[in-house]
Length: 379
Image (cartoon, rainbow, N blue to C red; front, side, top):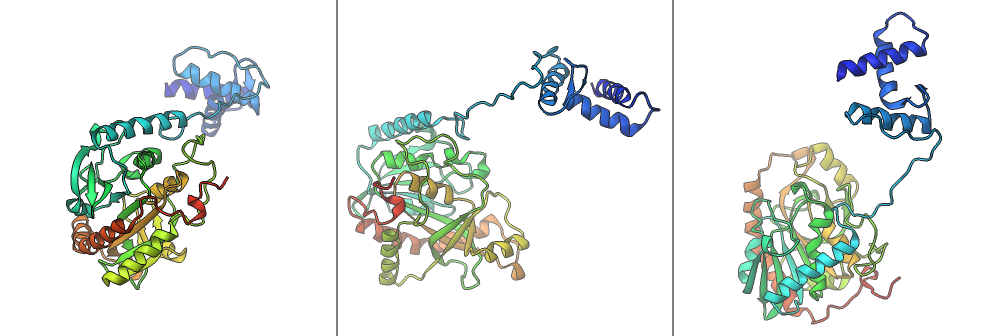
């Protein structure tokens, strides 16, 4: 095949330069021009729209399919209208899948949760504080992905915490696992369909702020999305949320104020800061840490931001807490391993459990909507 392309490319280039002596560069350039720009219908090199016609014909011919239908010279290129999001579901399908998942969970646990909690890396022990009534493995819930990250059990715990009905995800989904952001955030939409009035997210994060120490808790006040994607890309379904959700107050102020007050009462040190999300799974270089700190980030991780975007889109008030499991100071950087991260997360978890338990017990049946991002009246 390669020899055939080279021979045809050389022939095309020789015709163009009126049979000049053999030149390797001419053969190479002719090969490229023949593959991408040759218009068989005119038996000459084309340009513009003619080049598109030649491109279609040549690649069809190389694939063994014979000559492709000739595209008339000057014909406009046909572009299909996008109908699907990046997960391969159009928004109508997404809405229907959400309803199917919610119906399945209701069959096994017919309650309205006060809140839904997502437990991050090394933070799954909080589930032991829940009086579990039903535990549903993700692979049994329609359309749920499977959690493949270490320390993530991959099950939905349905029960009560502090006497209040809640849902808790023991393990989340990550972009680096190969899922799309639409799939990663699918449970958030299911929680909204089940009537949850708040979403509480937790994660293990690297500390960029030199004032932080390993084991500290950080209340996320804002975020920076550097994952290179957005879960809302694609046609929008107004039943799920508005086309352009406002992110000026992505993290619900009422929930943040309540968490800060409870931290003071419990004498739990609680920093506030900006969380930056990257795709992973590789950790960042010293130069990347320096850049992230320069643009205003206090902690870095590989999750949380997609769920927050979808929660805002769904008008579901959200708060998020990070456990600082390692320090990412570019001038004092040392290697870190997953066992180290898990150990620090487990040591800090008792404080996180106390704070979340107190928060759940103070949540009203209908969580107050305080931010523009959560205002259902906003067009």
